[in-house]
Image (tube, rainbow, N blue to C red; front, side, top):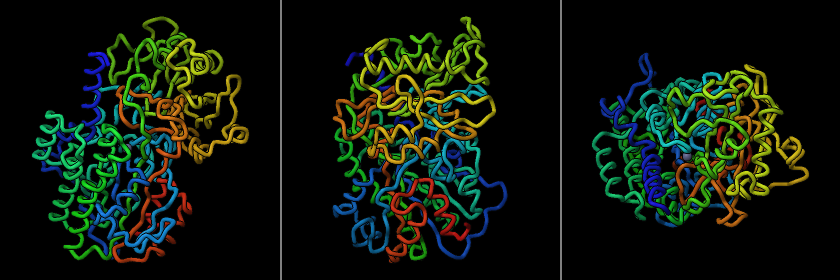
Length: 555
Ligand SMILES: [Zn+2]
């Protein structure tokens, strides 16, 4: 790697680990001891009846979680679930064997679906990054193509995700006493907590010392963040009592997996040596308060992980020469710089790219509104199909097939999607597959080209692209080659940083998530009959919202 590449990578890693850290540094919540009361009126009194805890495990791989549970090194989770009876059934729990993420399998989009019960085309939050044509605004609550962390900060200080969501959150639907620890989706919760200033100081010094890339989960910065998440919520329970619904978010699992060699095995060690302990602390707090027996416990992740090569050869970046940005420029579009905010002189762009790891969105302007340099496009207008969309489609298709105009793109893309643009203010049409000549519905394409490695592709792409906010997923969608049935040397990812693993694709591996319903001493068969009502053995992660409503008899 070149020196500049090394520096760039160092900056990128800092940006990634800052996901939940830097934001808390300046947040109002820290000034008040890590807790914010979000409800304007008095919090509702605690109800009689069941409690629910949702452990939101960012990036947890279901097979790895099961391995940890069976290893003997995760005693808290193992004893909660009880004896494994096979096919997802445990003595006191049911783990849906084939639960699936939404698309893209990317943090902000997925948690938004989990905690609203709606897909991106309806809830308005389609990824870690996206572009809003109506206001010509680039959003990056988790930066992937950009390095700026301001939007990530705003997820804590300014409820960025809550302001973007167009539908009610689970907390608003329930109207019960809800505590949310660190989760980006917290609009409508009673209390929202983040890590404390003192633990942040420890985290920061760990980062500077470079322990982040260490192989020991216990000493990792990620582990300190996750322990902080639990500490804050326990303090809130001590101060305000047990809530009806507790959501506790662990961002560290995902961060650790991205930056650690042998990521899938490393994550198992992390789940054993960090996650299990903090789960145990939370359960102990409920036990101490005499509330555990009457509590449903849910484990769910937003997406899983696919190992990748941590080098620039497999990274599809944002440079002018060999990246997807260069493809669009070669098709004669002025491409928006990969930066959250732009100088006024850079606002004459005609194309925007937003990255999600294994997926990328390309937004195109009607260039007849901005043909001259320096002229700003009318982004409220959709692009023209032939003159704008098809030009870029062909450039990507040819680059992927024959390496022209961009050599590095050859063999990097699995599928290219596009659709006829919808008129301004109209619901977007579902994405279709581009075969080099025509757009073909995903349904018809899959009849001729079966893809069992891309489960529920048609339904999940519809949920991302078809609807009132479907245009937030771009005019063209690129899916990188990523699935586990090809060698790691043939997997590529759209990102500003190289990592040991990525997600964001439609592949079985990173789409498959843990989704477990448990009850201390309860009946696993009963857990199974409840959870199976929400999609059999293959529930979508967005079933979390109706499931929790049912547990509170609010459905
Ligand atoms: Zn995530």
